[in-house]
Image 1 (cartoon, helix red, strand yellow):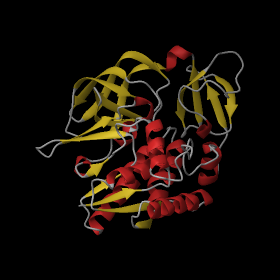
Image 2: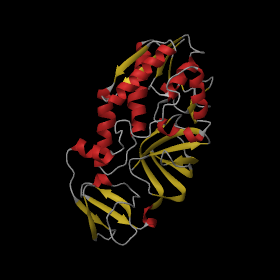
Image 3: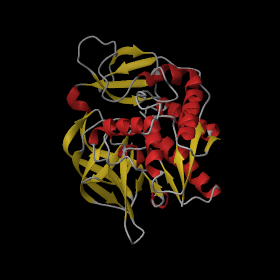
Image 4: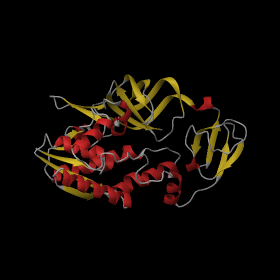
Length: 338
């Protein structure tokens, strides 16, 4: 039995290798070069050291072209069109798991594995289910809903039952030098967290425009619609109020604001909906941001057009973010808020 493990150079993927060594006869560690930076070089170096420590072969795969097109370019384009994207969801589907599956076939391996905090349940009838991690504070199932059932069938996520504290302790026991390495808090390709400056540089220009109320009255001016997201209150530069961003219209170069109640909604339309185990309709829970608690909702599937009706109005739901559906701890699927 052979397994390809994605290694980021961090503690989570390193512990995954250590745990899987007890199960698989052969493990190959794989680190992706998604872009060029000293931080990426450091991650690759750490992964190589860990692979040596755990006595497994290690390969580096350059997937920078896919990462540029599928993640960075799409991230900038989303902001340019008035949306608030989540690049981690896109990266998992189009880069990480796409390439792990590609390498699995290339090396004739049985399984791929990652250090994500989520659980994959496998059944005798070839069915698999994606579930939240046992410890919800580290759960990453929200970012994985777009991974196809066919890939999940031969994927392992061995950290789904562990807390972060337990994972760090396991790393120490195995002598893994990154046991106390801090978790990354920023978008990986924007290490300083200044995504607005990144988008401005990427698209090359930003036009000034008007901030208006729902009646069309000009209240102020902005220096680019990419500076705003739905529900935003701070940084509007308006007197009076308080005002909240209700809509962003890049074609008209306008930002529309209203009071807080005007940005509370219960009906959500979705695009690009994916179901892991086939279509679902009815009562479920949803997450409309990765950091949010789940909300009670009704999922409506009208001839393939999926929408969500929340049991209670929610504040600041942003276009471009992902709405993920849950039944208990099981991930049913999700879609992009439009």
